[in-house]
Amino acid sequence: MNSQAAEILIESDDVDEQDGAEVGASEDEPEVPTERRAADAAADVARLVPLLEGILFAAGEPVSIARLVDALDGPDRRDIVRALDLLGDRLDEEGRGLRLVRVAGGYQLRTLAEHGPWIRRLLGGKPPRLSRAMLETLAIIAYRQPCTRPEIEAIRGVDVDAVLSTLLERRMIRIVGRKDAPGRPILYATTKEFLEVFSLPDLDALPPLKDLGELAEAFTTGAADAGANGNGAGEPAAAEADGVPDVPTDRQE
Image 1 (tube, rainbow, N blue to C red):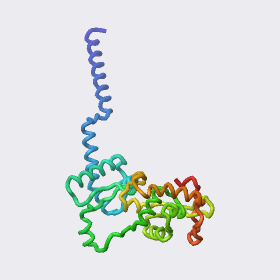
Image 2: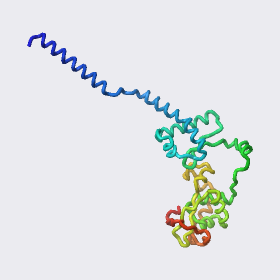
Image 3: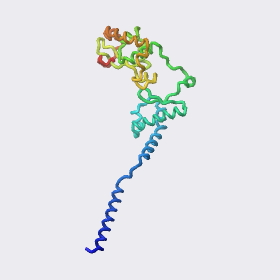
Image 4: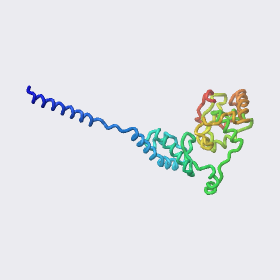
């Protein structure tokens, strides 16, 4: 092979290698800079803020993250939580008339407490009041749930039949089953409405029992009395309800 032919072959190989490199490079997706990805993600979250504000305003009641994920059908849980945090910060910083609160296992838009008198003047009526007897009974149920009427009465020292009926009507408590004990007494527990009224995200947010003062002491003596009385004697037959399942005793605490 002469020198001229060899030079032609070398040049041909160089061209093939360059073409192959160009083809390989074109097949790979261009890498997006980290800063750009972060900016795009932040923009997506920012666009969610007014949408979430409208959804929560229209819902009125607390809405869980799971429900928001289903309704939006796109953004993931992390982005929605970030957008909710941003919405809450904006409402606070701008001094708006609404606040975002985490309550009853979800998120809700609420008016400011100091605006209550004007809102009630516009809408009329007064907010329902809870008597001392209702508050004490609710506290016992909240900390001991599920619990029976005799257990509540052992702690309070008085009959609570009328109070339980009122709390059931106001949907502050509910029947969750029957205790696996003599007489199969009905078990009561708090509701989502209870969490809303007291602005609690969940039951774990309840204050320590020791902070209840005299009622905390009654818990100790009342629990002992309830155990001595069989934890269920005296439940009236009228309180029985068909279809209420038994609940094992070990679910009491």
